[in-house]
Image (cartoon, rainbow, N blue to C red; front, side, top):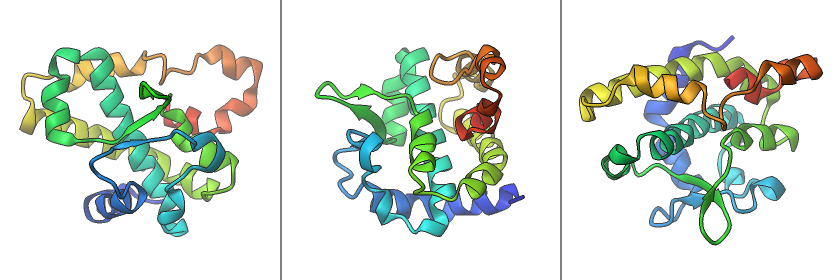
Length: 179
């Protein structure tokens, strides 16, 4: 199983460059309009790094959407500091459920499923560390604990156990592991 230092090193040293390759027009940080068909932009990320890239992208988008949904009064400052990409569709730039960042490339065979699953816990640990650190350093009035409390019950994150009871294979899906 990959250790957290490997994905942490990737996040700190390579993720931004891969993000630029994925979204070359930084002035337009929107992506996902055709995600369900072709995962456009992913072809610009080396296949051997896609699992790490997608997990970092998923958590990056998830944080951005959670801030927008649950902490709207702080979102403007957050967005000015981060300039995170937006996963959306349609003319109004409606937000998509970020779980598709992981599930669609997995279903289409565009990422190594085993690597995606084995990096998931390390990516989650990194995500928690980064959120705590970001709030402490850049937005000390924000509570990481309150953020995570809101996030765990967010409709785009939570996967009710009834789904697992109805379909036990749900436990093996990457979006459930990320939850």
